[in-house]
Image (cartoon, rainbow, N blue to C red):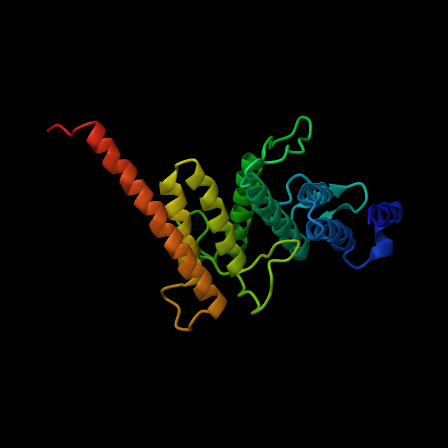
Amino acid sequence: MTRAIEAAMALPATSLDPDPLLKLSGLYVTMSSMFETTYQPIKAFASLREALPHFGEEALAKDVKYRISNPWAGSRPLSDEEHKRVIGITQKLGQMALQLSSTRVPPPFPVIEGKSPNDWEQAAEEYLSSALTAMLRLGLKPGKAGGTAVAGRDVDLPEGLEGQDEGASGRVDKRGLGMTMEALSEVYARRGQYDLAGNLLLQAVSTLLPPQSKEPPPMRDRCQGEYIAINMYSALTRLAAMVSQCFQDKPVTY
């Protein structure tokens, strides 16, 4: 697969028209998936991370039509599909980093000199928060820019297809948004930031189970939403216990 990537980049980008950047990044995604299925998670993570620079430094910018400058693909506007691809890859990297940080003895993080992040937990937070912000911007309904937005009410992303898996390059849809919020909440919960974790879980539930919706959500969304609600209750319970302990240690005076 490495040879396939090298061969592709040795050719003019126009030889892979249409969508040469999607095809090139697809090779990285395929290589990452191969490493993941053969239980080589660090190589899978590193392979997927190598795809990001091809989209440019500001690939997750608010303006999805900004001009990229790529020696291979040239200088041109980033298409909507390319923007979604880089969001999905970033989301997947965050989930992979979170999973690796959860192991009993996390493996060494493949640091790139002069660049952040520097460990698995930091990588999980940076990638997940970047993907979450980009998805919220992508799905924000007209008239909500610059104001307070509620994910389940003011963000409109497509429904995930029933039976569709997360995939090697993540997923940019309503279910993917909920999954990203849930994963990022776990990062905050580990640090004892249960208020942030609980808020993200609440937003995830309202995304998957929008209270104002007249149509019943898909069964998979219902199951995931109910599972997240249980996690949210657990996070809020721990937060309440911490507050109670604070009052016990420092009696309130009037």
